[in-house]
Image (cartoon, rainbow, N blue to C red; front, side):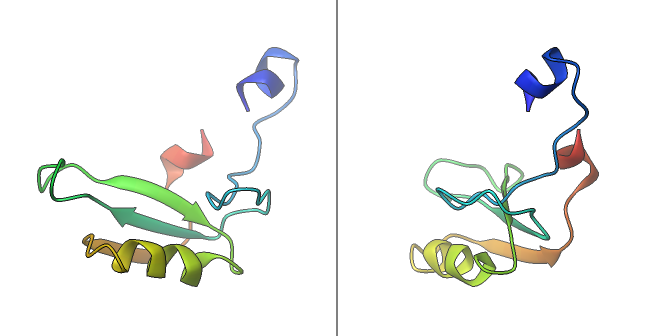
Length: 78
């Protein structure tokens, strides 16, 4: 994305966080690892429709607190 900006391109669409996926993200997964993150610290993964369940299950299997919401946060667009 930064390369696109430096090369005169526009902003790239937010893409799925699943390794190897370049599809446009339509979901946000806010999560944290309670062993290393305080309750106010959350990470956000983006997901396409095909991978939202996979990423949710990956985090849930590790008992990480998570919240899945439709859409992409505005700061992910920048």
